[in-house]
Length: 341
Ligand code: ASP
Image (cartoon, rainbow, N blue to C red; front, side):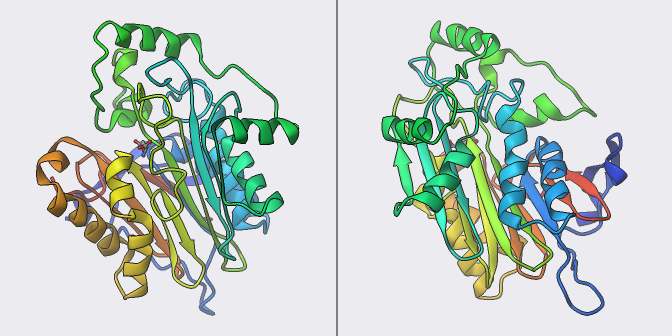
C-alpha cells in the first residue's frame, strides 16, 4: 500500500520529480539516538515553505523561528489564494486571516479575523511573547499589530477580487476538496476558475537540533465564509497543538469539523497513548467520520503529525491530501497520503 504512493522528490532542493515513497514514518535519529532536525508541512506549497524553514534548522536555529520563517513563504505569495496575501476574501470582500503558533515550552499565540497584515503568524508570535494573552481577534488584533510596527496593506489581489465578484453571481458556499493540488502540482497542472480555489491552510511542524518541537498554522480560511467566521487554524488544540514531550499535530480542511473534535490535541494525546503519527491522525479522522458520516463524505479534513522521535504521518478523509517533508537528505512532497475514501 505505502510503496504505491507517489511523491515529488526534490533532493538537493532541485526540480520536482515524481517518485515512489516507501514509508510514511521514518526514524530520523543519529547513531547516538539524537533526533535530527526535520520540518513537515501541509499541501504542495509546503515544499517552498519547508525550504525556508530548513535554512533556520540547518544552521542550528530554533524550531519556533523555523516554522515562523517557513510559513512566511505562502503568506507572502499572491498566487496562493488560501493563505495570507492574495487569499480569497469572505462573503463581504474582506481578506480575514487566522493563524497560531506554539513553542516547545507550551507557549502559544493566535490571531483570528485579522485584516490587512501580510504575516499574521508573526502577529500571533508577538501575542505569545509580548502579552499575557493567547488570542487576539479582529480589530483588536489589527490594532495590536499596528502598534507593533506591522504595516497595513491591501491583501486583496486583483485575481482574488475577480474570483469573489464571480462567486457573488451565484453566492453558493461550496468548499471544493484538495484545490491546492490543482494549483501547485507542477507534475499535473490544471487551471480551475478562480472561484473554485476556496480553502487550505499551511500547518507546519518542526524539530530543531536540540530536539525541540514547535508548530505554526496560518490561513485565509474558507473563501466566501460569513464575515467573522473563525476556523480551526487559529484555535490551539484544533488547528495546531504541540507538546514537546510527545509531538505535534496540525490540520487542514473544513475547520468546523476539526474544532468539534479538538482535532490536533486529540492527535497528540493519541500519540501519548502510543499511537504512531499516522494511526493517531487516522483515529482523529475516524471520529469526524463516525459523528457525521453524511457530511464527511463531502468534505476534506487532513491531519499531519510529527512525534518526538522525528517520525511523521498523515491521514485525511479524502484522497489528494499532500504534505511536504524536509530533512538534511531531502525535501519530498507526498501527493497521495492515506485517506478514508
Ligand atoms: N482549516 C481551514 C479553515 O477551516 C481551511 C483549510 O485548511 O482548508 O479555515
